[in-house]
Length: 270
Image 1 (cartoon, rainbow, N blue to C red):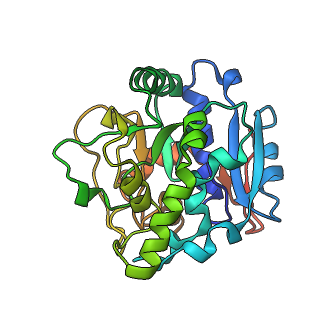
Image 2: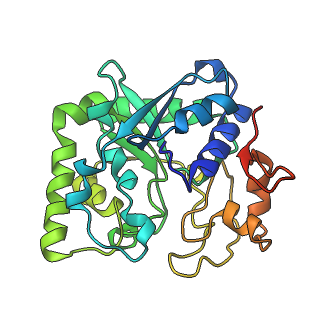
């Protein structure tokens, strides 16, 4: 996961939800990516004293020269492109990781996701597993609702040079502008038909509305293991504004943000 000032509250809520629903939280290890020079690691440690994690400073210059303008300024944040560099930064002894966006809540045991993805990746010798969508076409995937969660085989990623493949498509985008949205289209251009599908219950997406207005949305029919506030509207912003959507009440129990009587704000330790 990534950690930055605006999304830190969401990231901590996501971690809280994962720990709460995990059958064996002691087996989890978190890899966080944050802007170089920040101190978010101390905040995470104060909230989760027993959490096993590492914070990696991400140098924006690795990708800033490749980023194109998007429909929403937030989609141009260099941290959105961290997923392309995981295999370069995380220790080579780590074979697989689950990548999660910061605006998600997990309401199921993440071990189920891990085991399902591992079985699919092993059987197909694939690099990435991600939730699949019914009746979807390639053009609809050019949106930030895709891959809020994905499981990546880092050994195969390194061997296949996938980071450089993604960067090449970003270079094309800078020259010709072939898509409109952020960091995911180059992934899709590289992996297109090589993604192992996971149950769509692992990405109940679009709860933040669209990228311009962030209107309220309802949950989709069917089982839910992960809720994703993709889109402009983030639950912590709407709750603070006193105008939450009904789905934001599902996020609120995992929020560890408190406002002391002095008016200052902090993250509550648990």
